[in-house]
Image (cartoon, rainbow over all chains, first blue to last red; front, side):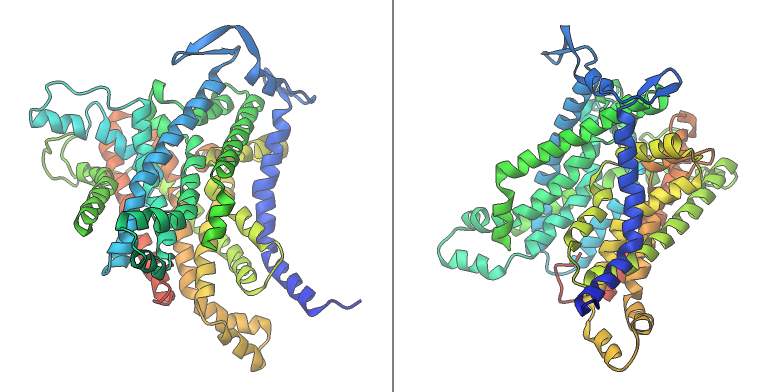
Amino acid sequence: MRPTPQRSAWLVGYGLLSPALALMAVMLVAPLLAMVVLSFWTQQGFEIDRSFTLANYFALVEPSSEPIVWMGIPIPLKYPVPAILLGKSILMSLAVTIAVIAMAYPMAYFLAFRVQRNKALWLVLLTIPFWTSYLLRVFAWKIVLGFNGAINSGLKSIGVIAEPLSFLLYNPLAVIITLVHAWIAFTVLPIYVSLEKIDRSLLEAATDLGDSKWRRFLRVTLPLSAPGTIGAALLVFIPTVGDYVTPTLVGGPGGTMIGNLIQELFLRQNNAPLGAAVAIVMMLVIGLLVLIFLWLIGFHKLRSRVG
Amino acid sequence: MKRPLLFYAILFMVFLYGPILLAPLFSFNDSIFATFPLKGFTFRHYAGLATNTGLLQALEASLIVATASSIIATAISVPAAIALTRHKLPGSAAIIAGMSAPLVIPSIIFGVALLIILLRFLGVELSLWTIGASHVFICIPFAMTVLMSRLEGFDKSLEEASRDLGEGAWMTFLRVTLPLAMSGIISSLLLCFITSFDEFVLAFFLSGTQPTLPVYLFGQLRFPNKLPGMLALGSSILFASALLVILAELLRRRGVPSNSAGET
């Protein structure tokens, strides 16, 4: 049987893709599988016990008769740290995502509908911070918020305060502000693209049919830009839950997140199997939350309307 | 409506750039603290960098890793981008989604998963090689985005014409596709270089005895007396990255036809 022309075209196509697919398999699939396997083993001192067990997962949900109270919520777990940190990280990321979208959307709207000249300049200016070192952008906030930082020394030198404000740095709010700043440039562009794609004649039609500017925005612009905006929101929410750099540099003891625990379990406490289990549970919980969210808002309907 | 949005956009830019520009500001300040009021202008924090051997070694490591991983990532992405833009393949949407995984999955997950397979399963020692391999992987989505938009941006009939005139697939690639895609390839190289050069989390988890520049910088941030030097170093990195981004953007914009306003 001779290959059909279409089939041989597919073969060429997959042949061209093969280095990239091989890289994905080696760098993504294999390490994740290794992590799953490790999470079913246990750490015994310096040795790894390779018999299959769910002990690491059980440790994360093992009930205890004496609940530990965190922020007024009793948590009846023997080892409550992972559950608390995961919940806290999700809440913090949620706050970051909402703030980022609320701040980036008007900026993207401005770019798409108001900027006539120098649009490329605006876009490049928005792109540069995204590409510059994440570590340095986070560290910049340590300089801004620190005990001897820019805000404190600035306010002191103009005589507004006598003593430095100590509540600025090393808390969850500092982590949230820093994460908002670090991710905001990343979100303007996808929202801008989805606004830019909107057919302007739809907007004219809405006006001709008697919609006010505000109603037109709510009934035409906002729904049509929703898929791009939601995509941007997920691109912020998912990676920030596991962020490690920001809580380490500006979080202090109160601002730690789940990423810090994973790092701690791997590098300091030498319990890689438990760390692997925490990492997997974190990914599953994030994935589940995202699916529930997309289902709740009826993402497929939204997307099909944009076409 | 016009004025309030413009005002907002300016505030937005101040928020975006304000904190970043503090590092260069304090790096020229003649004091070991990053505090107001400014003391005086000096280059001494920069002069100190040139004699710091630990820093120079880390810089060299970063340059090697970034150069190698940007070339390899781009070399892998060029054929993949051609396949996805020129051949209608079943499953291409899933493949594109899989390739954007590094953008979405938290890098700590990759760092930890790679650490497990390298140390516990394969027994590979951590080195610049392990960092480089992980950087190739995270560069792929950026390289693919740039290259695919460039390949979609020029007239496909040029390639068809070359084939009709008797050139084979390979010569068509060399004489038509490659020259036309060159601006995209260079901007992919530049963006991958920056991505690798600035990457911290994977390098932190996967570095052996030789740190890259961000890992070195992170280690030094714990020492308050090293602050001015690190501000100078950070400012230099910021400046170099910004320069490369502007170059990459200029190249990319020149390659994209001006009527496709939706391109970014």
